[in-house]
Length: 280
Ligand SMILES: [Zn+2]
Image (cartoon, rainbow, N blue to C red; front, side):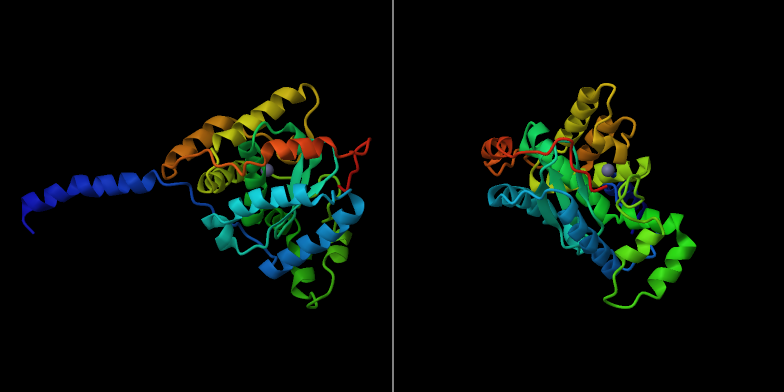
């Protein structure tokens, strides 16, 4: 290869590196003592408890609606590759919240369904929750804070034996301030950015996630919405999501199931308990 030819390759190489550097941020699950199977088992055992303690809405239309939005997000690359079996249920609770248990079970409050202005905002909260699952944030946090005790419990666990009881004795349950559901600010930032990937692939504009969190923040006033007690608001949230969405492959947003208005009518008819039921 002559000198002029190799010089000519430099700008091309630079462009390729620049294009790579502009790609979406890559995230990988952190240190974790739970196997994926244990993680799924833990989530399913806890989901069974949530179903007893909270009021699950047995409205086929609403459950089908959130499942449709959830499956669309779940068909994105990062969600698919996680291999977690995501499920979606609605619970009658007026507080603005949703939560996802390790391994995939997600519960969405009627209060959240009432509060979102459009389907992309709902997809934003769901994509954020799903990202905590994909990145195994809850069990990773538990692994790091209870390293010694967990090593013994998980290492000696008999296949098929219950995990929830043993972990509850170590203070790893779904109670207030649960390490499985109360996230650090860095976990929050990761869930925002990965959530924006899931949204974009599904055809929802990621900026709607940021808009909804801003709206929640503004509406809360002196009272912090329940969502923020488990998901602390990182700094410059909207800007970070906007910058990440610029790194994603350009695509047309605006996907909708077309069912959002009917969902709103349905949810307005759901009776919510007062004071709110709390499983946590
Ligand atoms: Zn979060």
